[in-house]
Length: 139
Image (cartoon, rainbow, N blue to C red; front, top):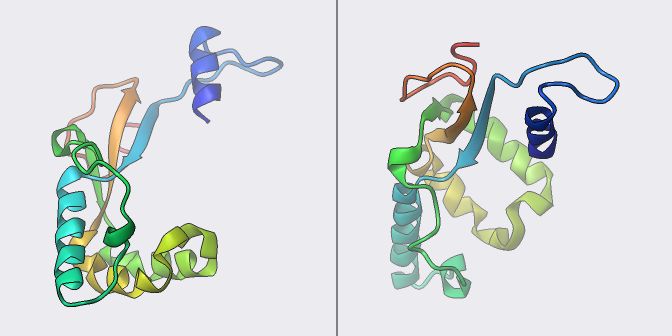
Protein backbone atom coordinates (compact mmCIF):
# COMPACT_ATOMS: atom_id res chain seq x y z
CA UNK A 1 0.00 0.00 0.00
CA UNK A 2 2.75 2.47 0.87
CA UNK A 3 4.43 1.86 -2.50
CA UNK A 4 1.22 2.90 -4.26
CA UNK A 5 0.95 5.95 -1.99
CA UNK A 6 4.50 7.13 -2.73
CA UNK A 7 4.08 6.49 -6.47
CA UNK A 8 1.00 8.72 -6.45
CA UNK A 9 2.98 11.45 -4.69
CA UNK A 10 5.67 11.29 -7.37
CA UNK A 11 3.14 11.21 -10.22
CA UNK A 12 0.94 14.03 -8.92
CA UNK A 13 -1.98 11.79 -7.96
CA UNK A 14 -2.17 10.02 -11.31
CA UNK A 15 -2.05 6.25 -11.49
CA UNK A 16 -1.32 4.61 -14.85
CA UNK A 17 -4.63 4.11 -16.65
CA UNK A 18 -6.77 5.63 -13.91
CA UNK A 19 -8.29 8.88 -12.77
CA UNK A 20 -6.38 11.12 -10.35
CA UNK A 21 -6.99 10.48 -6.67
CA UNK A 22 -5.57 11.57 -3.34
CA UNK A 23 -4.82 9.67 -0.17
CA UNK A 24 -6.30 11.82 2.60
CA UNK A 25 -4.52 10.23 5.58
CA UNK A 26 -1.87 7.60 6.24
CA UNK A 27 -1.51 5.92 9.62
CA UNK A 28 1.06 3.50 10.96
CA UNK A 29 -0.15 0.94 13.49
CA UNK A 30 2.16 1.39 16.48
CA UNK A 31 2.78 -0.18 19.87
CA UNK A 32 3.47 2.43 22.59
CA UNK A 33 6.74 2.07 24.48
CA UNK A 34 4.80 2.37 27.75
CA UNK A 35 2.77 -0.71 26.79
CA UNK A 36 5.94 -2.60 25.85
CA UNK A 37 7.31 -1.84 29.32
CA UNK A 38 4.06 -3.02 30.99
CA UNK A 39 4.09 -6.24 28.95
CA UNK A 40 7.67 -6.90 30.03
CA UNK A 41 6.72 -6.27 33.68
CA UNK A 42 3.84 -8.75 33.45
CA UNK A 43 6.09 -11.39 31.90
CA UNK A 44 8.79 -10.75 34.49
CA UNK A 45 6.29 -11.36 37.31
CA UNK A 46 5.17 -14.59 35.63
CA UNK A 47 8.79 -15.70 35.22
CA UNK A 48 9.36 -15.04 38.94
CA UNK A 49 6.37 -17.31 39.64
CA UNK A 50 7.99 -20.09 37.61
CA UNK A 51 5.81 -19.77 34.51
CA UNK A 52 7.66 -19.87 31.19
CA UNK A 53 7.09 -16.82 28.99
CA UNK A 54 8.45 -15.59 25.65
CA UNK A 55 10.69 -13.34 27.77
CA UNK A 56 13.14 -16.22 28.16
CA UNK A 57 13.74 -16.32 24.41
CA UNK A 58 13.55 -12.58 23.79
CA UNK A 59 16.21 -11.45 21.34
CA UNK A 60 15.39 -7.73 21.04
CA UNK A 61 16.70 -4.46 22.39
CA UNK A 62 13.82 -3.22 24.54
CA UNK A 63 15.14 0.33 24.45
CA UNK A 64 14.15 0.62 20.77
CA UNK A 65 10.97 -1.50 20.69
CA UNK A 66 7.72 0.38 20.32
CA UNK A 67 6.78 3.90 19.37
CA UNK A 68 7.54 6.79 21.73
CA UNK A 69 4.23 7.60 23.39
CA UNK A 70 4.54 11.28 22.41
CA UNK A 71 4.35 10.34 18.70
CA UNK A 72 1.04 8.49 19.01
CA UNK A 73 -1.69 10.60 17.45
CA UNK A 74 -4.69 8.28 17.62
CA UNK A 75 -6.09 5.86 20.20
CA UNK A 76 -9.17 3.76 19.48
CA UNK A 77 -10.85 2.13 22.48
CA UNK A 78 -11.29 -1.54 21.53
CA UNK A 79 -12.30 -3.07 24.86
CA UNK A 80 -15.84 -3.75 23.63
CA UNK A 81 -14.56 -5.78 20.66
CA UNK A 82 -11.52 -7.53 22.13
CA UNK A 83 -13.40 -10.84 22.09
CA UNK A 84 -13.68 -10.58 18.29
CA UNK A 85 -10.01 -9.67 17.92
CA UNK A 86 -8.93 -12.69 19.98
CA UNK A 87 -11.31 -14.96 18.06
CA UNK A 88 -9.77 -13.78 14.79
CA UNK A 89 -6.24 -14.28 16.10
CA UNK A 90 -7.07 -17.79 17.32
CA UNK A 91 -8.59 -18.63 13.92
CA UNK A 92 -5.27 -17.86 12.23
CA UNK A 93 -2.50 -19.76 14.00
CA UNK A 94 0.19 -17.82 12.13
CA UNK A 95 -0.90 -14.59 13.87
CA UNK A 96 0.30 -15.76 17.26
CA UNK A 97 3.74 -16.94 16.14
CA UNK A 98 6.00 -18.19 18.90
CA UNK A 99 3.59 -17.25 21.70
CA UNK A 100 1.80 -20.57 21.32
CA UNK A 101 0.37 -21.70 24.65
CA UNK A 102 1.26 -18.38 26.28
CA UNK A 103 -1.61 -16.59 24.51
CA UNK A 104 -3.98 -17.16 27.44
CA UNK A 105 -1.96 -14.69 29.53
CA UNK A 106 -2.31 -11.97 26.90
CA UNK A 107 -6.03 -12.63 26.66
CA UNK A 108 -6.34 -12.40 30.43
CA UNK A 109 -4.59 -9.02 30.69
CA UNK A 110 -5.53 -7.48 27.33
CA UNK A 111 -8.33 -5.27 28.69
CA UNK A 112 -5.78 -3.74 31.06
CA UNK A 113 -2.65 -3.89 28.92
CA UNK A 114 -4.12 -3.14 25.45
CA UNK A 115 -7.42 -1.31 25.84
CA UNK A 116 -6.58 0.78 22.76
CA UNK A 117 -5.37 0.23 19.23
CA UNK A 118 -2.79 2.94 18.67
CA UNK A 119 -1.75 4.73 15.51
CA UNK A 120 0.60 7.41 14.32
CA UNK A 121 -0.70 9.72 11.59
CA UNK A 122 2.24 10.20 9.21
CA UNK A 123 0.42 11.99 6.38
CA UNK A 124 -2.72 14.10 6.28
CA UNK A 125 -4.03 16.63 3.79
CA UNK A 126 -5.50 18.57 6.73
CA UNK A 127 -3.89 19.23 10.09
CA UNK A 128 -5.02 16.77 12.73
CA UNK A 129 -5.79 17.58 16.34
CA UNK A 130 -4.22 14.86 18.50
CA UNK A 131 -5.28 12.94 20.36
CA UNK A 132 -7.71 11.55 17.82
CA UNK A 133 -10.19 8.80 18.64
CA UNK A 134 -11.50 8.33 15.09
CA UNK A 135 -9.36 7.36 12.11
CA UNK A 136 -11.89 8.94 9.77
CA UNK A 137 -12.12 12.33 11.50
CA UNK A 138 -11.68 15.21 9.10
CA UNK A 139 -12.19 13.23 5.91
